[in-house]
Length: 341
Image (cartoon, rainbow, N blue to C red):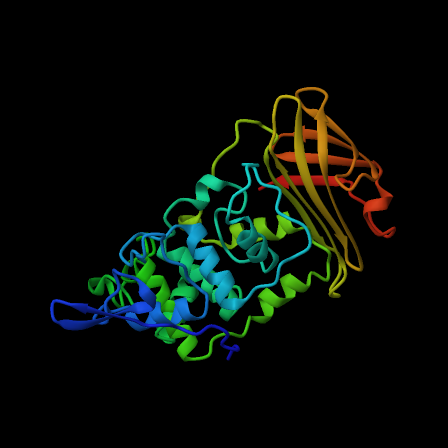
């Protein structure tokens, strides 16, 4: 159990000759509200905030970025080194929370796009995000079952019980602020604060995978029904990967991952990770487009010399490293042909 550092001051008001206790000072959460105890608990420990007019809006639909803040605060996720390179480059109040979640590879849609962050979060995304941190990487059905087994959440459509788990749970339904806080309160009641081994391993990042790649892996972990993407107009913009297991040992493999974003007619940003079993490296920078299918990068965002040539193939990206030794271990390189994901 975490140390409790906040003290809740209950406001007692006289209303129509009777006393009405308001949860944490929120005018719209009375003592008889189903989420009263959950809201009071969450405000006391700094997990939630209300609005400037003194309300909590318990029935309002929660956005993904609002849920991201709640989840990051509940688990007290650590802030990573570096920041995400987004497709929408404008700074956003939720950047801090998405950076922290990306460090643990949590399944979310809005890592690279402020517009996706502002959309209502679906129950299926909530299930996968919570389960990833509490239990480990799981598919949609296993994530739903985890929430049901631990009474963190319940189904919404009883007519589908024992027939269709996803319809029973209501994976595509929106979630209210009160419902999310109630889930977190139930997690608190069973001391579900330990972060899963899967999430911790991603955060420890022994293979030196870039923050953008870890975020993309989290997004890819979402069930296809739950994924929301904003397509870029550029033919360059995409995620590309290569993986080859050449032996039975844990380190006998080769892997390359590249994310191209913020593409214009003249340039694009690239985040790339290489791993050859024991050796690894990552680089971020901006490449200049030299023709309809070719581009070149001369230095990394760190200011190091890093010359790499890129060729856009049919559903693939060919990468040729000319000189980028300052950004990686000497036992590996960035060259390879990566398949568009």
